[in-house]
Image 1 (cartoon, helix red, strand yellow):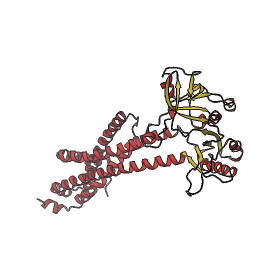
Image 2 (cartoon, one colour; image 1 turned 180 degrees about the vertical axis):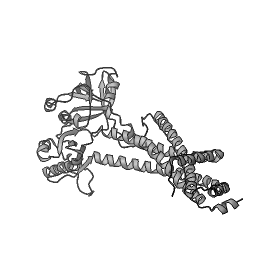
Image 3 (spheres, helix red, strand yellow; image 1 turned 135 degrees about the vertical axis):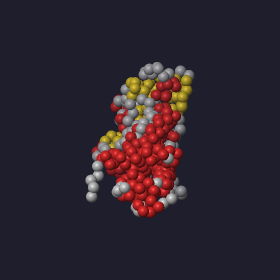
Image 4 (cartoon, helix red, strand yellow; image 1 turned 120 degrees about the horizontal axis):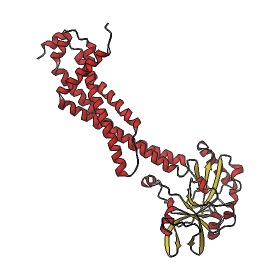
Length: 415
């Protein structure tokens, strides 16, 4: 057996490239097939990873350990009278920390049945999402303040008429470049003093997916005790809590609902929500979108691979006498096989590199026109080039094997 040298590989590679140059049109067409397929793979990878990054970023604006508990109002028995009350009250809050070890902190949330509540300041009106919350609300909800302060315990205990407003409320009522701290908001006959402004939160993707139609930047937050006083109730409409960790979320939900059911003698059923459900929904949606795109990309790669197989098979037929002469002069079967495999691989790698470059530009183009900084998925780029090499080897193997299997005498007789 002879020893395989790098110089032999180099000579075979140069010969393969020279052969491809002789059939430029066929080579270009085959390269284009692979280029389009790899570009499609790149675009799918870039878009899916970019959107996933943005969705996770927006989900994190809720806090990934956040969970919600509220009364289930639908009754399976239509003839049973609906019990009054939200199933959660101020007394329940006193037992949360001692009975729910998996709950790190909790805040009540109080709101009215109205979709929006009008607020005014010096003759300017704006519809807002008014919520009564506790001291821990900003921390649990992962909210940041750009101006002012959060609620203090005395604000809650004394039902102080103070408010924290969203950035859009600040812009619409007072102006984007105005400091609204200590300015007055009027909620009906109630005068609210602004003590803080919330940082803007971006939830464009979740809104477009229909997962969140609630504009968090048009919130007005007040002490929940003040809201209860105005509504004439001690009910809490929703408990919003933070689990001790992400893995403790389901345990925390169970502890909260068990406590509420025991305290209210099992008169109410409760609905529980957590970020786990939202994350699973987002990942499931992204998987389906990516799958459709990848199937289309793989079909394109399959077409490109068939194109390579076609030109290599044609090349074997056209160069049958050349193969016979080379074998008669002492060329090994391995050399013939390697030459045709290299020709197919060169076509595929060139197509893969061009597809990667085109995919990168396509990613930047999508980012520019969509307004989202999707970036480039370099892992997808690496996989795309690797796939192009595999496609080249697989597509070229049969024609290469066929060429290497030709007998010198039969090849020399071929016309």
